[in-house]
Length: 81
Image (cartoon, rainbow, N blue to C red):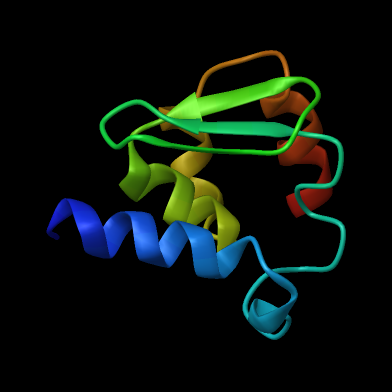
């Protein structure tokens, strides 16, 4: 996926317009950062990884959690359970 599409998708999924795609409160209080795209969102405990893994996690795919790092991953994992 081209870089700009990944960035656009991440931006969309972290807005209220994505309500039906992202569980309410999923990323509240977390700092997300894509390591392969110039993109970040939020503040708080960190969750970072490739943009693709973040996109999957934002849309509820728990398989992506093993590809993310940071002190906020445990919080994200518990919210997806």
